Every structure is written in structure tokens, then in C-alpha cells.
Length: 332
Image 1 (cartoon, rainbow, N blue to C red):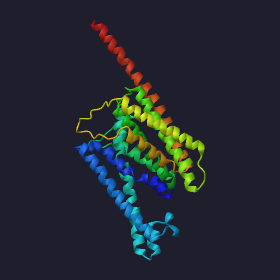
Image 2: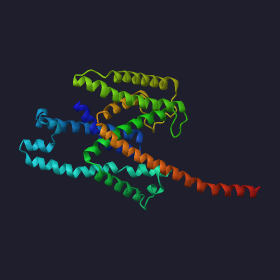
Image 3: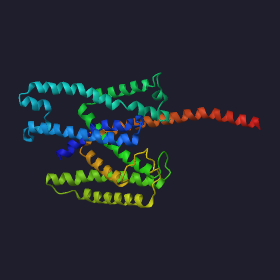
């Protein structure tokens, strides 16, 4: 249980790998560079993190409070005060760098949404050097306010939950694009199947952790309602994957060598969605509630903006339509 909880909490650090994907448009050869960059950074981070955790476990055994001990505590317990201060200064120095790296691709993403009309035009304005100056300031100030208002422990869990949920959305989008729903819902039945798969894997992951695995580890009996719901959702997910694999053809260019093609679609994305939701279920329900409230505020604000933006676009378009109609009638 402790390993799984730690694994779920580590997804705060996976934002860095997400930044690599977000900056793919800047790469010269994405199909070759991106897989190597992701594999290299993942392996490097896994090896270094594993070695660091092994060192901490050796310094502070589990029965001595290793689950809540920091590297500073470990060095201090062995009388290495100088190492304690080096680690403390290093953490303070590197944390702002990690935050800046997390913010780095945000202007590019927000500007792309602004260019598509999904956000105000101020986010896509560039200065003479091609930098999204206003967007950087707005995003930076907004994130600074959040960091001041929310305790770091809560913010850490909220970000990890958000990252895992965004990974699920990415997996669902991958299936959508592979079967013809890239940019528009050309295959409505596929869209329905994918969202059903999204919900089923989420329910299966949650019931597996909360009603089966956790009960077995605690030595108590399994929750039969969770067991039945787990079986039903897993069976439904398998059926959906089978239908997508056998009844629908791939509708993207699989021969284009400039594009990286994920293997095992839709099976691998379905398994990944289940695993992600299983990890999300490790967090406290209160942190789920915090994230839900934050998402609700963002969604409501976004809906209001879209309605206002649509009305403005219609008012601008109506005079143009009248002018075009008058010009065509005069030409006749």
C-alpha cells in the first residue's frame, strides 16, 4: 500500500515529461527525437530516484520512521550536518527551477487555444521577438496566486490527480484519433464507445483499490458490491476494446514516417486508463473534492466565456453577411 501511495504522489514530478511532449512542435524530427527523449528522461529519472530512495532507506530504516523522514533527517541522524545543509540548500535552489520548467510550455499551449478561438486573443499576442509576453505574465500571476492560497501538501496531491486524469484523457484522445475522430466527431459510435471505456476503466480502477485490494491487505473481507461492479466494468471494457479492434478500421496515416505511431491501440490505452485510475484512488477524497471544486470553477468560467465569445462573433459576422448579400445583389 505504501509503495502504491508513493507511486501516485510521484506523478507531480511527471509534469516534466509532459513538458517534453508539449514542446514536440519545436523538435526538428519529432518521430525520432520524442521517443528517445521520453525514454531517456524516464529511465534517467527512474534510476536516479531509485538510488536516492535506496540510500534514504539505508540511512533511516522503516521502523525508525523512514516513511516520513527526509534526506536532511537521515544525514542529521548520522551526524553529517554538512550534508544536511547541502541537501537543504539544493532543494531550495532546485524547487523554483522545477516550477519554471512546469510553466515553460504553458504559453505555447494557451496561445494555441487562443488562436483557435477557445481563449481571448490576448493570450496569442507576441512581442517583436516572438514571445507570448502577456500570456506569460497572466499565467505566471495566476499560478503564483494559487501557490500562495493553497497549502503545498494539498496542491501536490491535486496536481498529481490532475496529471493522472490528463493522462487518461490523452489515452482516450489517442483512440479517438486512431479511429477517425481527429478534429471532429466523424465516428459518433466510436466516440460513445471511447467515453464508455473511459468511465468503465475509471470505475474498475476505483473499485479494485477501494473494495478489493485494500480490503485484502487489511485482512478484512472484500466488498461484494465493489467486486461485482469491478467484474462488470472490466468485462464491458474488454468488449469495447474487442469491438474497436475488430469492427473499425484505422483512419490515420500509419505509413507516414514523420509521425510516431503508438502500438497496441486500443488495448494499451485501455490498460493505462485503468492503472491511472487505480493510482488516483490512492488519494484522500477531500483532495478529490478540492480538485473538483477548482475544475468546476474553471469550467463554469469557460462556458460563460464561450457564450460571450459566440455572441460577439455572431454580431461581427452579421454585418459582413449583409454587406456580402448587398454586393452580390448589386452585381446582379
